[in-house]
Image (cartoon, rainbow, N blue to C red; front, side, top):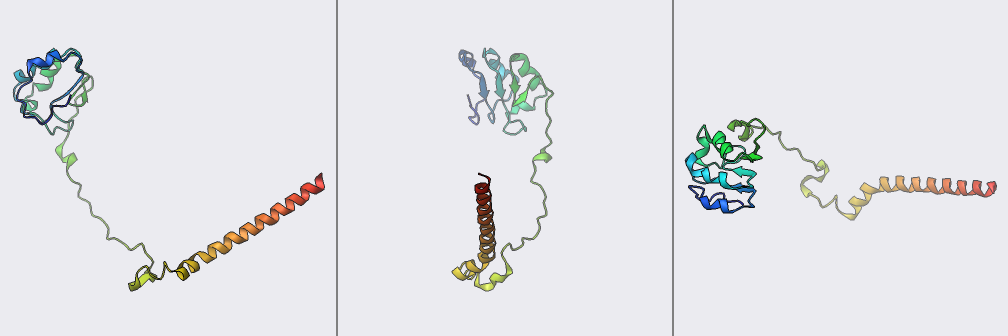
Length: 164
């Protein structure tokens, strides 16, 4: 269940009636005190709980309490993940600088079109004569290769006739 960004200030004890609830997202709300999240400990099948994003953004004020993680895991010992981090692994620490926009120096763009286009643009290169002159050497090479293949096939058929 995703209840993120709903101005929630406390986790209501009625959530314990959600007996099949396994995932609860409460990111970007107004939960400020540890006591305000006690009720999550009464959700019997809760495995995934988040009060903030894995990078520390979209958090509730309670996430700034140094006891938050230990308190929440104490209330919910069956959690597999808290705030998108596995509970059985060390907590990941993120440096906000890792998410800053990179300072890149990009090279000046280079034209990928032939200089022959000049001021006329694409007109000449896409005309029938332009296409013909560009493709002619390739067509000639292909036709020569096809002729060699036909000759090789003919020679092989002649050899097969002799062998029979």
